[in-house]
Length: 188
Image (cartoon, rainbow, N blue to C red):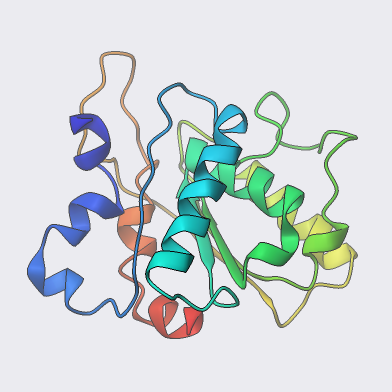
């Protein structure tokens, strides 16, 4: 859909000068509805197919997503923690209705040793930065340290997409995150 292509890593990769700096294979599935939980098996099937057909190293798989995709990252990582070498949730959330608590069915215990780099902007008007703050605090309480990075931008950017609902102030922090030179080296 044009909305997704206009506001995500996919759009950034359309620029040859940007794409040439990224030494990775990137897939960007799009959920047909606003919920990733019902599409988990499709995403994993696609990933397994690509690992097999392209002879990819299954121990070097990074999972990233923004906003609802960041929610998908947390859910997939929690359900399948050994599938990923790294996760990068950007302005993501676990419990959309309450940024200060995690659902009782959601456990970060298996994720505490996973390489995780979160990105969020303080002025995000769509997904409160408290979501990432709470997850980082919970992971640190479980012992995550050197494997956990958190970039909390004082101010994000608005995504270049248009919405009739509201302005998306600060919600485009992926524009900043995916331009962090250290990020692509850290994934390696």
